[in-house]
Amino acid sequence: MFPKLAVILVLSAVIAATLLHLRQQRLLLMNQMADFQQQMDDNREQTWDLQVRIHQRLTPDQLREAIARRQLDLAPMVPLDPNAALLAEAPYDVSRP
Image (cartoon, rainbow, N blue to C red; front, side, top):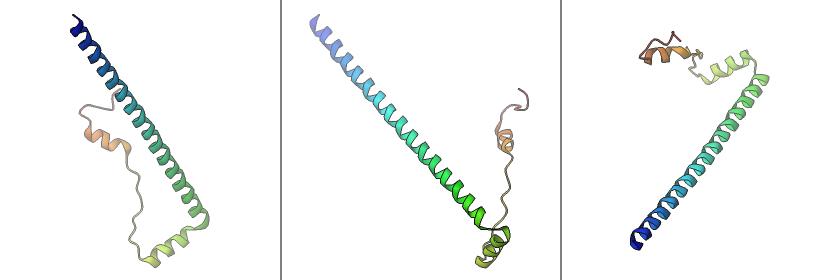
């Protein structure tokens, strides 16, 4: 009887330690994800600030001249239809609620 109880206690302790380790790993990963999200937000904000500074210092004519001077082959950006990809991939009719 005692050996069975000892085995059960040891196995319970091992399972508990494993669960605690997995929980700690999950918390660390969540913290890393939050740090990466903050870093992405900071980079996005920095990009927006740079875009505003460029806009304040550069007129459209100056921009065209700079593009022509460097002989860049740029095309205008066209916004994509956000529903186009969803409609193409949807196995059902997404227009109905």
